[in-house]
Image (cartoon, rainbow, N blue to C red):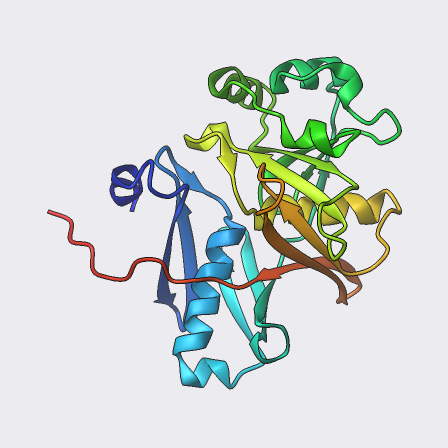
Length: 258
């Protein structure tokens, strides 16, 4: 699996592998550098494709999958919203002693670009995510950190990905713009991120900022962002984030390893 992911460096950020294990749908994820504990956008793409092309699955409102983080319910809302929704792993709220000045230096921005009214947080919603609130939309769109210094910053602080956000968006149908940087995994930016935005959902809930289902714009393109949907559910006395979307098949075929 690692060999295949390394061969596809530059074509995709992560490779998702799906197989049956003990009667369950099992997923594992690899970047060109290493195994990734959880990859939300790959999970959406794989499960959306499985539902659409497996009549027995399409008839089910929910299936349970297993990833390294554990068992996750997946909800089939293709008929209602042309989307499937993944239950994010139970969050871990981790200590964060990073200062705005240090984070700004790693991102290549001025410290006053970070929103002083909201805290920096590290939350694991599948990956250890540093959440950085940005003050305005233009700044968020124009953040371009250097990959290697940011990678070293992440490794030194045991951070998997860096998520920046601003409560502003181009479309009136969306509420936030987000971007996610993942140099630890061999590339700078992830264009659509389930785990990072799940951590962001947990951030909003914990900071008492959640005000209903969300649609997020993600990426640096002002007018052509990716869209990620977030919902909140109560399950077994716990608050969980669902993140969802759909997928488009770009290439289809067989890959042979020699």
